Length: 262
Ligand SMILES: C[S@@+](CC[C@H](N)C(=O)[O-])C[C@H]1O[C@@H](n2cnc3c(N)ncnc32)[C@H](O)[C@@H]1O
Image 1: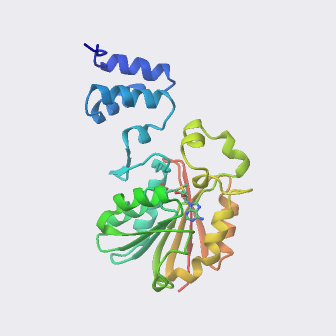
Image 2: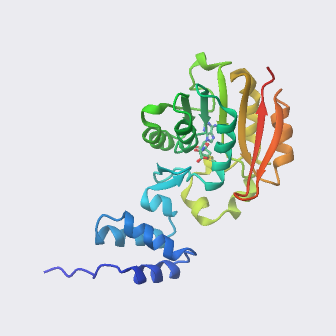
């Protein structure tokens, strides 16, 4: 008869996670215990986490704006700091807003905004097929998710009608990608991270078209780093939008908002 290893206890999990370098070992142990269907599943999860997979890829979801967002392997994990961008968007948007979530990844931003604005019309897009599949599940019946490069897959009928354009584009300068924690560097796709030489290449491409897609008075919201904020603001302003920077000390988040004049 085959011998089974004894089920992992909470203290054993914490010890193993700590040995693997997990700083919040107790929190992670609780999450793994709550997520695993059975002892074998728990052991498999521990093995994957100890091998360095992001916790969200191991359990299959992340909490974002109070929602449970599914996160598939190879898809960018939505960061808690990006909740600040969503809060800014909620403050700007009216009930029936037309919302586009460009570079949507899991679709977390658009999904969260749509939860705050039940009557909003939501469109999302990403170039990565894995992200698009994941976003389709997260967005569900609340909107439509398209696959393709930036604005290319969006219906032409949205031109000049977008009230809120969310675009958490990749913004890590190419030479800094190697400095990212292994969880991001190895397990998130490079296309989700690498923003080109100065980190602003994808932003420049978004800004070049944003004015055509935004409704008068509509706003583009992008996340950036503290270091890039001044140049990101200049870039957004160069596209004919009125640009400003807003900062959350609490979430360590920096967002540039560009508004199309009425
Ligand atoms: C930083 S991640 C943000 C994902 C999601 N918005 C979030 O905050 O969780 C950037 C996303 O942009 C997508 N992306 C990169 N270049 C793109 C392009 N040219 N067109 C569409 N999507 C792109 C990547 O696949 C990735 O999902």
